[in-house]
Each structure stands twice: as C-alpha cells, then as structure tokens.
Image 1 (cartoon, helix red, strand yellow):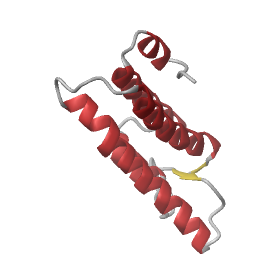
Image 2 (tube, rainbow, N blue to C red):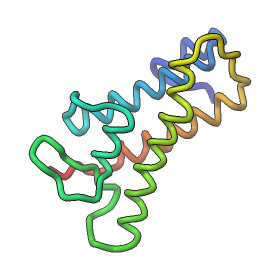
Image 3 (tube, one colour):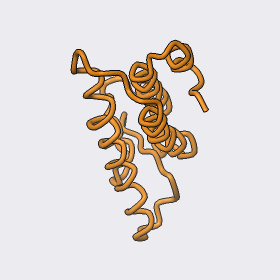
Image 4 (spheres, rainbow, N blue to C red):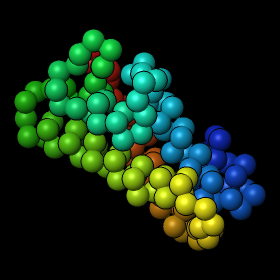
Amino acid sequence: MPPSGRARPLWQSGHLREAVTAAAKKVNAETQNKVGRRDVSETKLFKSAFSQDAPKPGRPRLRIMASDGSDTFRSLHRGAMSFAEGCYAGIRNPSSHEDGLPELPEHQALERLAAFSVLARWVDSATVES
C-alpha cells in the first residue's frame, strides 16, 4: 500500500527514497507537536519523549503505558527510544545526508515506511505526561 500524506506524491512519482524521508520528517513534526517542543528533533526528541524519567518543566514525556515501575513499562519505553534512534540513524540520516544514493527498490521502501509507521503509532497512542 502506498503511503499517505506528504509522501504520497513522491511515492507515486517514483521517488521512493524521498517518500521515506518525508514520512520521517512527518513523524518528527507530529512528535514535536504532541510534546510541544521545537528545541530538539529526531533522536534527541525521542530520547527525551520516551525517557523513563519523570517529566520536567518544558520536557514532557510520552507514555505508551502508565508508569507503574514494571519491567514492561521500562522495556516498552527503552525499546521505543532505541527504535526511534535506529529509524533516524539508519534510515532517515543516510538518505538525507548522502548524495547520489540509488533509488530504493519498492520492497525496501515499504519496509522503511513500515518502521516509521510503527513509531508513528506509538507516538499517536501515547499519552503526554507533563
């Protein structure tokens, strides 16, 4: 299934790598909006948002589940933080910082979009703890 939103026109015109990058930018922007922060982005944003530490003024947290001190809570948030770092370091950054990369095969582009979709779903379903 092709992507929606900003990535769709890029996908439809065969710019699959750019479509993935647009999806990454959209997830970043939506996360910034949800936590009300523009001072950090990408890896730093997600490290702060999914931190298990208590929120601080101007640094709210995203909670995938209620903070109950369980191993599950710690695992979910550590995993979300690490997954986001991997998505931006391993998918978004190479495409944005390397010139002349070949176009992605469709199946690889879909896999990369799926990764950002998982991250977007976690952000969307999380509650903001201020």
